[in-house]
Image (cartoon, rainbow, N blue to C red; front, side, top):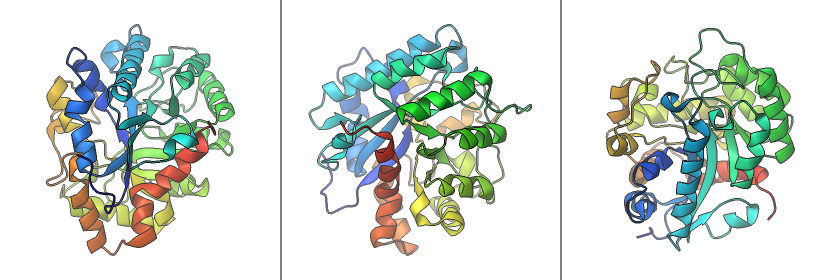
Length: 334
């Protein structure tokens, strides 16, 4: 049951829930049964759903896995009258009464070696594209690569096409050189980091330096705070996660901070999926911040933000308005 609209609207920039929906593809109405209740309980009005392909499926099976997840996204919309796909600015109307879903790519392995394939995924409704995951692909290096070469020639072509389309460019998981190369090439395209934390508080490759925070803000972008213990650091608590948020606000201002929860534990428990990546050991996938295990717990986060003095427009900005501002620039009129 959707929460009353007296509660703030939540917009979340990152979820891997499509992996679970593909795993449950033989079940009836898997999104409506396994994710919609949690999202609605948490007051989520807009959820970005990422297409992600694991290393075990690269390269041969990557396009197929990507299309399977895009199909799961479409099924989620078609099977529930309270859910709407968000492909244009007009689709943002009525969020809160209905749950809006945005399709994104977390890494471009699904494109194979051809940047022109992005047009297919744009037609399927993708409106946000992350160039890479932690590893290297045909287009760019991820933050886990020891030899950081940034964008490839193919990657330069891909960024140019994303700019032409007006698609939002997501720099989560990008290596330092990829981050700089993409920002130097993307012009006025909408830019964000869908899910990350602050390296000043926890120095790991997936988190952002203050200089990177400022570079995103200078382009009127946003950074989504993610609630994965490994990247929050110790103590792995809601309060320490909010220390990261406070730090980002102090560096770039409240208008450049949003939410990108990356609540992975439910997906991991449903699918048994792991990752061979040393930046995210398999045992970390089963951890969650106490009291903030999934989107259903967002009201707890809202209360904690209020205790820290976030109210009114400042609170609404973090919870939804900042992300909606950036996504709005990536959406065609109709």
